[in-house]
Image (spheres, one colour):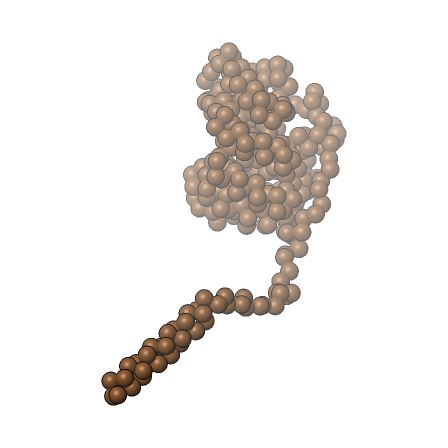
Length: 268
């Protein structure tokens, strides 16, 4: 009798233990409702990020401007931001997002060999409304080349741009800024490309650090400036948010190189 009572008690204890474990398991498996938070109605983006104005300027200049330019009109607060040596597979997409969020248009002087490696990025550059210019196919020093070699460099880059985007470049920038006067005249005569240099050079290719790049651009830029930068270098792209916002705060309006030249031509 005592053994029977002990067995019954053990069975009851096991049933109660199993029931409790099952209940605990249900509690653990039951999804926890998300914590609700109130919307942050206090945050407002800085006014200079609300750059809703799209600068609608003409871009016709062919045959109306000289062979070489490093700036636009000094009495207008328009500037041209230019990026050389891309498209780069990682840096250029980051830069495009920064420009898009601020409604800024820029001009990209692209290398033909990089286009062939990253055609989808060049398509996006054009789709986002930016201008592309001819920066040769291999980024060689044109001033040391024969006329035939120079033509091959420009032709191959032009053809790569046209094949990928269906548009043609309207200006060129020589690698290193190296181009003989005779060559500039030949390029203008045969291609219709003005040679575009710059008046603001942060020397970002030396990789001085993002804050230095920003400081140099903000200090050097004035009305009509053509700003040189390189989307080839990650620190340059890291510098762009502060650079772009700083220029916007100063009241500059960003236009393409063709728009800048058009304004210059109309003032002649």
